[in-house]
Length: 238
Image: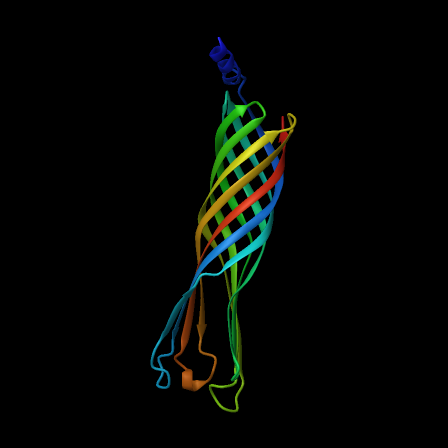
């Protein structure tokens, strides 16, 4: 008898009417970025005959805020749909600084101001007000890297300065797990944890310190992943 009573709420969910609805909402949260940055400097010159190669793994924490909208079809305890959204990010990270007391100062920074994503969302209602879901996405992230350099050593009596930047929108796969709780038929709150797999970006810097180093080139390759936690709300159009 007791087991039958436990099954009754599940049967009630399974026999509930099917429906579809649109929704819009917003969220805020924290983002942790992990980067793998590879520097390759190829002097290819008489004065410095060897190449430099090294890797850094910087991390950065930032605030994020976004808007989203979507459509869901619910049948019994199951639901599925699609969602699109955009997120602004305060990420700005100084990847590397080389400050030589003899007069060389080089700095590399990386910014990721925002992203757009398209997702499918599917899950199960554990009760009429609680929805657990998975959300795989394709996300396009805007990345900007900047190099600035000052060199007063390579050629005595000359001060060389350079500033270069590179921007790109790179695609990646993102996977999120979330919970959505309905406080009424129209309003819900949600919490979500996600991981964005590596996005790739590169910055190429040619020589800027005079003819003695005319063949020198630097290439910086970035591969960055993101782990985020967000809380938000949604309004559902009945």
